[in-house]
Image (cartoon, rainbow, N blue to C red):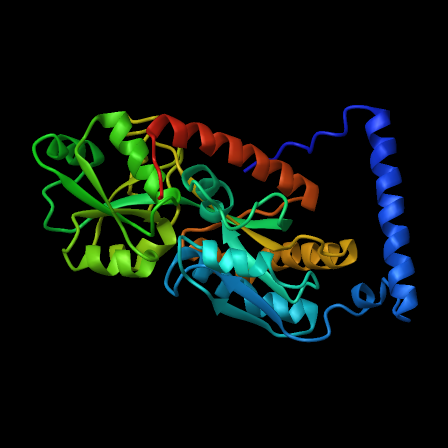
Length: 343
């Protein structure tokens, strides 16, 4: 995955105004902390000095949870403190992400977020509990994975084209991890691209959706590849297509949606670490450096790839934030075209 550089301010006047505001804000901060006898840089210089909570907005078993638990041990080693994964599921990760947005901006409460709460939900929910740009601090991306379309073995379809043909004779139910998330929009993309009769069945997280699909309660599922890989390898789900331009090394025999004649069905999830708005720059830089070192560790890379996940860092926090803004716009176009709503 490649990033484009963040766009610089348009004029020197704009830079000058921003510089003056920054100086005024810094002066106020110094004055306030000095009155309390506290150095404004003391916290940043000693960070971290205690355990860090890495919040995951989905239940255990989903791809966010998998990525977080792969990264946490090595990240903790590099930072010198425990990094504890805390699951706060609900509303397609909006509850957990909002919890972090409302936390103290000290770096001790951060989230392993993904495309769904950061760039999909803002385009599918009429009211958001937080603004992903204004209320959060983007630190860096860490990984990415495609979506996988899979069906219960009882469904008479061995390819994506056969599933589409079947959907024109009867309704096909497809589960997702929740309303308004990336898998939901991928289902809408499939429906609009093929005119098939696909029924979206939302669940509260990937784990319950995958379990019910493997149990035959739902015909199929569209989900991040890591959440489905175990059931596929056990033969409880049949993989039909990777929603990407290239096949996944984790399932090399599974063709892509492009190979099967649906080039518009492209959807991949990405994962990023975010903190509350107002994180001190030294804290952001400390976390950014440690996270990028984490995903460059061979053991971590091997664990991610084994789960169908590609490491994906960002050169700077600004590089990641520019990417997130682009993704916010791109999925807005998809959401409007499909009419997908979460509420």
